[in-house]
Image (cartoon, rainbow, N blue to C red; front, side):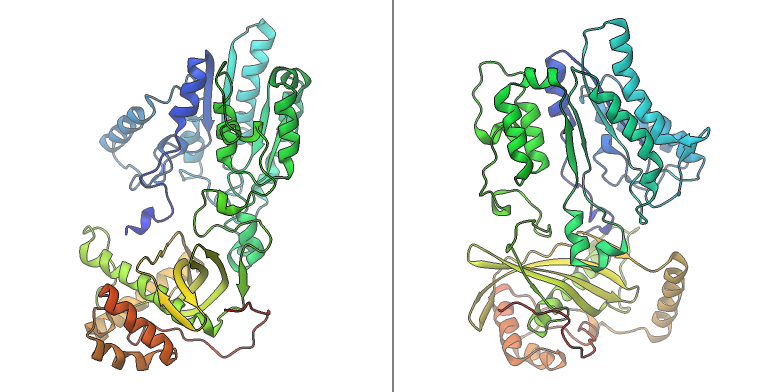
Length: 478
């Protein structure tokens, strides 16, 4: 696995051409704009935010990336890119190509850049109204002002956003939707608390529906919108709702109507397409357990070994420009927290955060296992997802840590006894004595090795160094 893509949209697209293509066929003028730079390493909305490599340095590098960008957006059915391309020039003043955590303000001529972006969108509607143009519009504006750790930068556009919404509510022929793609996800609160993690999967959404728009939609759709305010919905429901518009004579199912149809009151997360690591809003959906619960030590060690194996695989088989740690120090677990479990079919899905040293990094892991009483059996399909790795040390501390590691590796030249490898059963059982797990877990791991030809018992350097502590919360029952 290339960790640069571990949180991106590899093999996925946003499907801009689908939605914009539909409305283009209906005769709409289309605008899509955002305040990210197209040649940033993580690109922009137009490039599906996939990793593009390092920022271009030379003219031919810029030319190649621009060519790729143009080819990418050629079939998007976008008439107007708004101020999207101005983003690069504005951000260049701050010696950056994106707004992730820095700078504290992104201003141009005395006001936040985001205000100019909102001005552009609003002026399009205002100009058409002034000249009496009957052109129909579909516009999408994406702002990254809130993408930073403090949660305060977004306040810079409070007043302008308020005026924008107030102005659009007076546009009687326009439906306005304001939403976020996720809740706060880069704050310490979201890292360290279960409540903060839940907020990450709880974005806000509200819709402005002027009277003329309500009359155009019809009573059935408006009633459905009011009804669905208290239902579990996803952005797919928004997409389906827009895709159902303008199709005269076509019959849609409730699901195809999205939020314009009645969402069932008994809908749960089991009915939705969700990432395994996502936190469901339904009460009783998962059982939570205390941090470092010993009943899950074996599972945490298995996940830790999977992380180390992935890094070793990257070192052994990856490209030359991406290196793992070779024979040097492997990651050691220091804690496993935010443990939660749910049943799915005949399986249990267990999710937890694993904190490792050096670096105090956090990996979010998810594993599937089968369990009945005290007999636990790992299925062959273990879903371990390194969705994100968050480095919590400062760049200075991280640099010191790297220099220290390099020095240790140079002096020690550790041999390969720390490498997780396929072991004969006899050697495997011998290795199990190093683990902080009971005999049942060792037998469990032995069983898994026999079935999958993989070693899950971890040699020294891959176990968890936990301090004895009393549970802070009451855990669930296994």
